[in-house]
Image 1: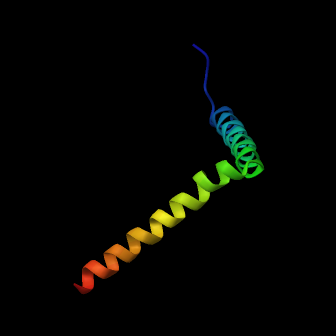
Image 2: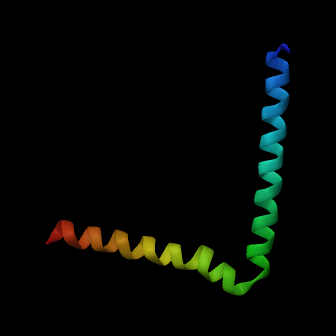
Length: 62
């Protein structure tokens, strides 16, 4: 059995985090490069959030 040290675990976790950040940057670049993707990934959820908040505010008053 091989020994697992804290240093080895931290190195693997840091590699994973670095890779995840790189993947997120790639996804963000692809999303912002296409106007259709930008609308569906950013604009539509924000509009839905706004509508949901308004419905809750109106429901509390009524």
